[in-house]
Image (cartoon, rainbow, N blue to C red):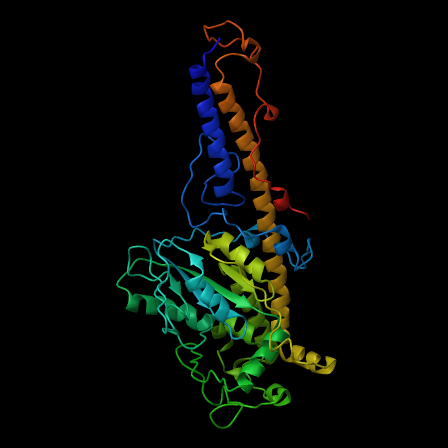
Length: 438
């Protein structure tokens, strides 16, 4: 018979294993890249790693993520797994930079504030009251990891587009910082339903906004007055009616999202006489789709929770608080006739096609990421149960049938009973709510 002291010595490591594994469930849940477990890996131990990507306070719930779209969305486009898997190895301590392309009236101001104020970082951005810009430096370095309105300001011009940013950002970063190592630039953006975005821009211009200081640089120069005539006389277009707004052929609100995401040098920039309109439109749309697909990340204004979810999984960064879906906007409160809505869609027919493509790809990426995450959860739990069984077997000094008997030699018999899940207390975390419901 074992004395009480021996029993306690045997029980301690078993309880310790249980405690560690239960804690592990909380710190390294579904999809966590910080725990370094991959399919096929064998758990040889448990490491409670500190990382900005932890789900111990995860505010996601299946219903929160699934309630704003169909559970299974059929795709109209032939996306490959490479198109859907957008995880990047973002190294904030190295030479990586996130570049935010801010398209007007897509919720970019809110998202931009999330980037500088709401990400859990080892060295948070320094945002001083009364200042428009925050200092977002790498840990221990005087180098910026974020290029955006609220970090570096409008360094490449007001609401710089893809054409401007891709030519300007590397030059600006080299001027601001002494670093000469090759940087990795990860472009991100936000898109919005074209009709809602268009109405929002109209209301904004109606209140006096102009963005007339935007440079619109392309092939080394800004457009001439003939290439880009203004829609109004005077300082601004305050009080403009929706009809007047729609009737200006040079209004940059028309198809703004396609234009700002396309490589304008492919169509002669703002020189409309360089090719026919049909060819120009085809090139612009194809370029915008390609650039959007190849960006590290983009979000949709209409899907705030999914936007947050995909950003976090793409960059292995965590936001401090959850994004909020606000559907009561100025655009939503505009009473439109069906005729006017169709007119807006015609004026933005390229944006309508781009958004259809973007929404499809966005939801496919979300479904792909969620499904993979759920598979990782199942694999991890299976590996944890196997590891626990192995630890339990190693901790047993005698076969179960000899307990309470007199074999004090402690040698394990050949008929040792193999541990099962029923022999051992189960982990307490309930993952039922995280199981995919396709």
